[in-house]
Image 1 (tube, rainbow, N blue to C red):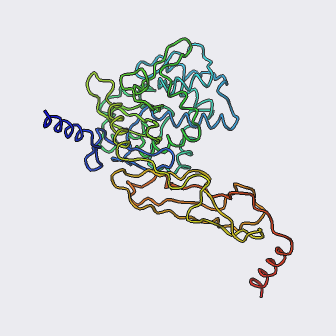
Image 2: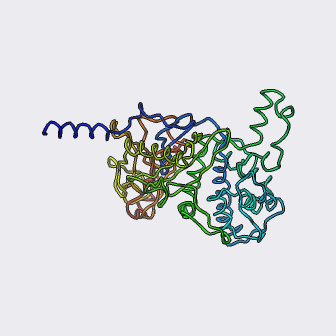
Image 3: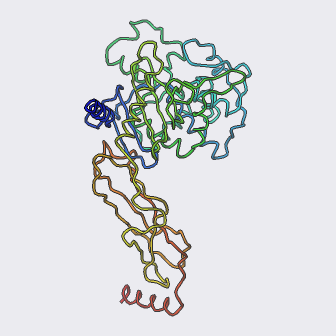
Length: 425
């Protein structure tokens, strides 16, 4: 009996071991996991290969809507007129949509329809409201991607739906459609949006960090749209079959060409994560496939990485200090403005390389408490892929821990005289 007990302990100990990086292979064409706070890449697979992502495009559309709200150009309560083009698409059986018979809806309701139901007409209505036309809105989308240094994406519309489904031209003859393999590839590229997993991670990072209120929408299991009950297709939310505690969003998508996709946002074990899985093959009659794949990626990250606080808010690092001109003290303490938190592998924690860099500009007394006087930066010793999205770094501002008063007038005069002698004579 005792031997059996020991065997069971060993058995369950073995199956509970984390899946290590060398052993983990995600069941998706492309994937990435990123720390939402620092931008550190925690896993990637073919993350820079663009694929058709369908309605995941709507998170970029949503970003530009929230940006317009922040700039005062509209509000969540602004009523939007539905154009004939957007309205006529509501009867297209080939695309995701909702009836828009009222022909006038609030921005907040159209966002619900776009982010939860992937409704093409609602998304187009938002694009027309913000950009004046969908064509101009697409230009805004491209400009925003350029601002974020995303250069490999293809954008043809605001929704991610193949434009041939929108205009009814998908049923063209095979003779016109397939002249050569090259022209066929070119046509496909020009008719549907494509993003890489890396691109989607960048967009999602900007969206949830700049406009975190979006998660109040994407975390709702269901909403009411003009009397229509909309159920969130994200089956990782509470009450759904793939429920995972901590998941707040973000968007489902996919295409016939590439398979199913999902960009997730979760907070677990002191980490806030963005996961992107693209091109998941649908298991027959199983709507949970892409969410099971996402959950496996989240589990891999939480089993293999953990947050570590290197420097706490209000603390100095290695007696960090800076020179301040004309202060009562020649040098003053520099403390962290917030916790410096890193994510590192649990099984292989390397020596931490942290650098304090004083402000490049000359600091002049007086200074208020909390004035920025430098930067504390962590250098990752084992980066994954590009290391960080958008070449970010794990860093915090270093600030003064108290008010820095100006020295007495005689000391100021003397300092000015010494500087004059050193610089001019």
